[in-house]
Image (cartoon, rainbow, N blue to C red; front, side):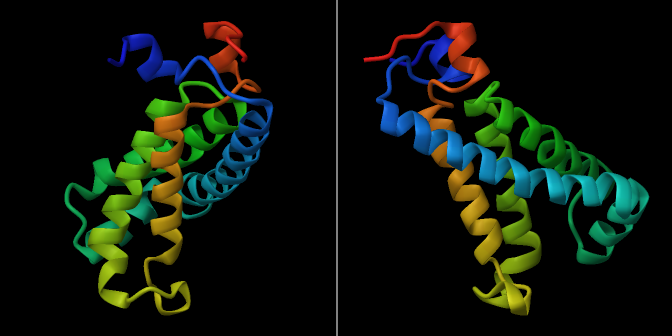
Length: 149
């Protein structure tokens, strides 16, 4: 049964190979998310993102714009640091589910056609990290304790 600690910080034990793979996955996803979040916050601005979301028919476009921008930018930073990774993974998956459903699903698979391949992979990796946690090379593990096998 999952405890509050395991939900927030992930499982206690992993192998070194798993830890390295989780670190690489977290950092790669974090970089992509920071880029997209920074674009929303600093390039387009929340007003521009809200306008775009309104035109695309996304529900509650102002709230959705802030949610997406903060999950992507702040979540990307958190993933790289390895803090609250299971929670961030779920938030990323929710963010990408919204993008898939409201924007990309009707355009097919390929991103070159406005399709869903990128948001599908980002959302799936978010779910993987939600289930696995951050691994040993993370603030989550430092806060929780070693627990290495």
